[in-house]
Image 1: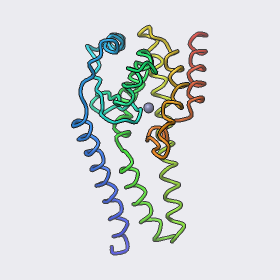
Image 2: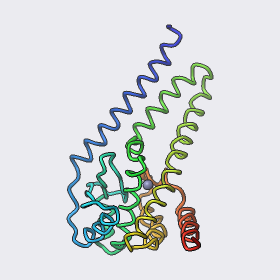
Image 3: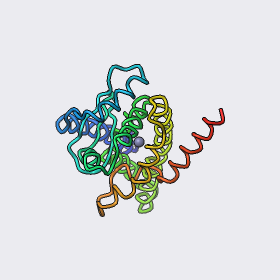
Image 4: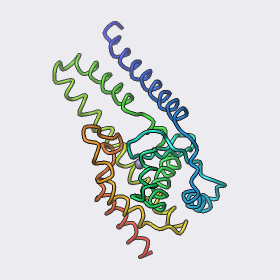
Length: 228
Ligand SMILES: [Zn+2]
């Protein structure tokens, strides 16, 4: 039994950190967000809602600067204040904002949202647990392997999620009569929009696939749709 105690402790630690991480993200979202009140965006999200037979889509502004979108497991969609500012200044169009909201709706509909709540502290918990575990068997190298496995897992999980959410958004935007073009044009702007934060790499930039690959995937989808 004593031999397994460190392993059990590592697993327990990871579980506790995961719960803390989800709880902290929830609390932060509740405390620092207000419902989006923008007539132009409301008109667009109402079109998305109509295409989904929903009364409305709950969109909130989350008071942080990095350009990002987020979906909570309860179905609320969050746009960061930094992102909304880009819309207000005209750098991002309403249709492009709608494409982000459609993408986040995809994460909710496809059940990704809960997994995405695992932020960096969640990943760190997993990394620490792995280090504790691996170091018992392979000292020194264990740390390196743990880091590698954690980032591999995180990027694998999120990469397929992103493509699926993009596909969902493309279908929804098409049904709502907005089309796929705003999705592609936003991707083209994305790198520039997030570049000016040297040193602070936003979570979603690390986990999102390359924008040109996402555009290519959308174009393949469009080609398939027009052929059908
Ligand atoms: Zn996403």
